[in-house]
Image 1 (cartoon, helix red, strand yellow):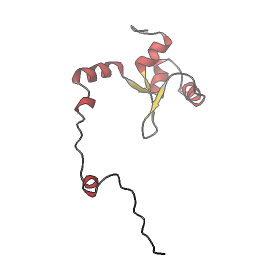
Image 2 (image 1 turned 135 degrees about the horizontal axis):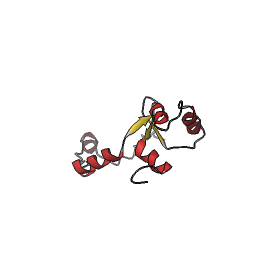
Image 3 (image 1 turned 90 degrees about the vertical axis):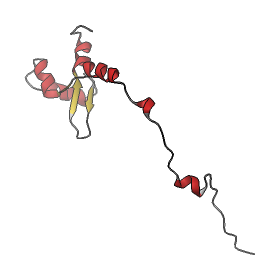
Length: 99
């Protein structure tokens, strides 16, 4: 009995694997008008700043609410800093023009 060397099934040729396919991301890019609209609605504040805005002595209650998955929606950056979207918080408590 001969030893047969099994060939791996190849979906692509060696030429296809070596080529980089150019991709156009132009349709994924935001327009300048869209960016302006986003910036008007996005104002991030830290939990300490939000505590000052809400007239709280410190941000302990915000931290507890975050730990218990309740309270205002919050966002965390790659460094672990927590931020709140101020217009979103104001809408949720019923303050402001778009409340």
